[in-house]
Image 1: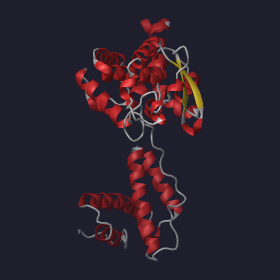
Image 2: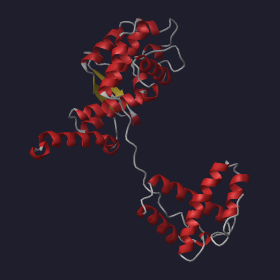
Image 3: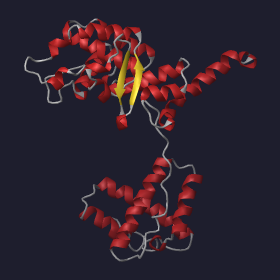
Image 4: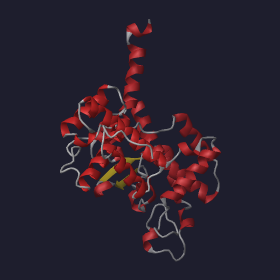
Length: 309
């Protein structure tokens, strides 16, 4: 292991040796820790002291410096994580009486944008599903139509009780997180696909199926008594391949995101979307505001008189 500049830290070498010997950290991991901690050690040298003696104010100043230098929040968070582990090591070894990182908040990570399909890609999936034959094909078509029409979580969809469907077949009552109920409308294509499926639903119920299975919208002979999330996930992957789409881009959750993104793109408001998705907090629904931002830009480019010049 390369020597560590003792003027910057008396304990960094010992920490890296511990990571390798006791935790079995890979060489690349050790190298990453060394780079991150040497960066902090160099910062402390400029403050005329060593890393081992850093105070909470020193660590806070380092975090500010990383932010001001334009370092990404992800990289800054990784470096702070390395510091936390280093000072926990010093504390556990009795080399420090405190942990100067304990009161430091990690840099806020930007929330990743939800991945969703274009309306054209969803149309390709629907077209392939429409051509499927037999009871399995009818069920797959109902599943994908209902998911895209409602934005249900996949666990909510596959575990729907038969009684969740209204008498007119155009709404479903969903029990979401925390046991909260919400009423979700079905569009005409989804209502028709579900009605067609109900004609063949009995094919998925064994003669000796328990009553709990018989009460499921999408019964299965499996342990759970209903179609599993993994099985539906695989059905979607097969549809994606048949539609010429990358199956890695297609999942039940991506279809849920697509439902939300497409609704907003066509004028839905966040509060209505929050209700449909079953989000307890509007902040969760706000991950879709990237769609609203784009819609506003398009509106300005179309409607503002100066935008046409």
